[in-house]
Image 1 (spheres, rainbow, N blue to C red):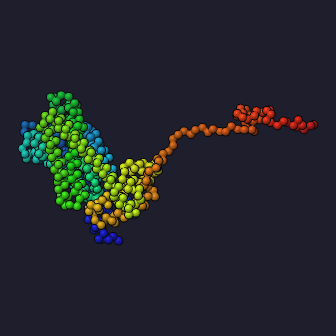
Image 2 (cartoon, rainbow, N blue to C red):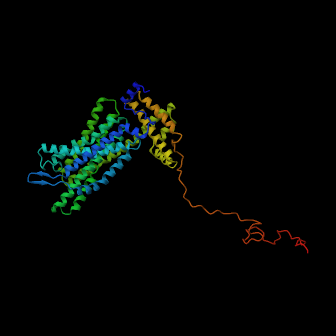
Image 3 (cartoon, rainbow, N blue to C red):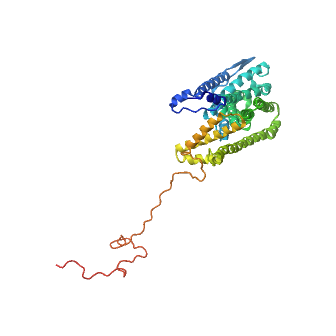
Length: 471
């Protein structure tokens, strides 16, 4: 029977409960909150994308004429042009989250939020705000420098970061490091940039195909793709990373003041960088843009990359220290603090495990996740984020790791891959036969070296009385 006091303490600390594996898989899926969250959010994403599609493909009547909408053919072509940038950033951010990667569902929902809901909010709010400011360009934020500088940064950064706050409220226990939150922020920004690039590319395709003054339409579109999809593709991920860092700091501190100010400061930094980027792109000449790009933007990107790499190594040191706490208590072997704190040993353990069967591989992967969660749980207790209720979860994790050790690879040092051999078998060298073999009496093989030939003195003389019976 469940203890109500312990259950309340677990919920207050946002600690996961023990799954009832006795139930069949369909029933567990129906009872899981993640299942219904995925269903609801996917429906929301589809509705947001469909609404944007209807808005962008519709003709807009203005004074003196009509602004034609984007045709479906241009949208399809623009989507294919925007895919490489999305694929690049998705791989980069997912690869960075190595020690405790999020669930695939969390990555998918975060990416989908940025690509659909965030762009839906930005499209309508930016257009409405631009109309209220009575800017030129018929209320289209894409044609107004004032809207792009003073409205779009705040609206877009808030729309992209909303999913971070939702995850922090629903699954705070899984956001254990700055890298985890930065990865989610980057995925939301990558999804946002993907849809925004489709809109910009499609508009360029339609405009260049309908206006002869543009010249070579394909060259104009290609130039825009290189500009947005390659040279300045770091923009949205870099901006939203600032908000992600603020949220990560707030989640790992006990101070209520820091919990409030850190996300606000991160959001303000993201909006400020976005504003500076848009202002330079809209108001500066080409030489000024190149100067800002070479001496401001690229150093900031390099600094962001170095910061993420440093945080990854910092995660390894944290795991080593926190797992060592349990090894000193005798709860874990001494090798765990070394093996599970180094990425190369963790990867080698998985490679060795997968060559020994699927059961060994899954057990090794689960063991790594279990001990990683245990280390971050200990760190949360040390920082005061989780109280004594975490001890129950810690004992369950230690017991789970103990049960997995008989199958999983817990120390891969000195082990080799169990790969099948594909070499062709060599011909077997047989020892030459001796008398009375084929090289002896009646044989036709040559005698081996050192064997006396027939009739040599090495053989005994034949009895002359031997012969057939007389008759």
